[in-house]
Each structure stands twice: as C-alpha cells, then as structure tokens.
Length: 244
Image (cartoon, rainbow, N blue to C red; front, side, top):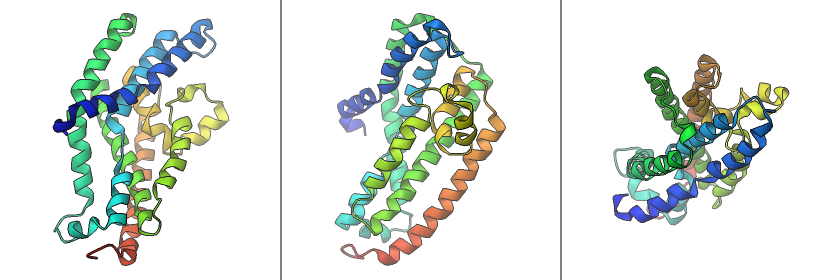
C-alpha cells in the first residue's frame, strides 16, 4: 500500500462528494428551514467524508477476479480463510490513507474555521467503536455479495445495484433528519443509515438512539455472517477454477 502513495491520494480525493454536497446543503440551510444550521451541515458532511475514507470496501472486485481467473485455488490450500487476506489489505490501506485524510481535514478547517470543534473523549471513543462496526458491516455485506461470483461472472452488478440504495439511504446525500418521518421509521431498521448517518451523528453530536443503533448493526452483522458462511460452503462445491 505504501508503494503506491500517489494512487492512495487520488482515491482519497475521489471521496470528496460529501464536501461538494456540503456546499449545496449549506446554502439551502440559510433560511433555517431544515432544523440544522449551516455549521451543522458543514460538520455533518465533514464527518461523512471521514467515515467514507475509513469504510470504503472493494473486496467484491478482488474476490470476483480470484474466482473467475482461478487465483482462489492456491489460497484454498493455505490453513487460513481467504477472507483474512482481504481484511489485511483493507486495514493496511486504511493506515496508509490516514495521512492524506488528515491533511484534507486540516485543509478543510482552514477554509471553514467556524466549523472547528473537538468532540469529548467519551463521544470520540463511541464514534471509533461505531466506525469499526460500520466498516465491519460494510465489508461483510459486500463480501457476502462477492460469494455470488461462484455462480456468475458479474457479481459486481449486485454491488452496483446495492450501491444505489446505499448512496441515497445511508446519509451520504443528506442527513437522515431531512427524510420524511415515515421514511425514517422504516430506514432505522435497515442497515443503510448505520453505515454513514449513525456514526456521523455520533461524532458531531446529533441526537441518535445509540443502544438501538448498536443492536441493529449487530443484528444485520449476524444475519449477513450466517448468509455468508452458507454461501461460502455452497460456493466451494460450485467452484471450478484452475487447480480446484
């Protein structure tokens, strides 16, 4: 990961969509119609930017290539589940990306000094816990979709379809508070808000039900884990790559 630092910088810049949306919502909030001040929107979308930097997942793209090209075969001979290769790759990329993300945050506060704030130690610790759970859930969901590579050569199409819902319902486009109340009542029981909106709200201090949020995240995590292991066992019987 350290060998291709310029590439990491470009990937970090590619996650700046929340900062673009921040400008849109900040202007829209000038009239005070949304219950959030412009500073709240600035902080929220900065939090979204940070969360996206540390929860980005690409395991389905790598796993699909391994299955289609037969590169999964030698890894099946190792006394280690192949998923840990992908986990190590993601974690090392997070550490290598960290300096670029912090530099962008520093530059951001130079442009918006009025948005600078320091969360309390307890809130920051809770945010770190939620952030780790959000990454684990995002990784587990995408890795479960990657299992369909055993049956189709285009498992990425499933992820692309899922990403449409993730984009609009996770809080990346707008805080969950902007959604109509009936929609929010349904969304809180889906995994989408807990991938971005929930950790962002925890970091900047927006009101959220922490206990329910953690339980919903754990519930979806258990469900996708069970589904993932079932698909893995069935998929290995289907796998016919070179050396299988």
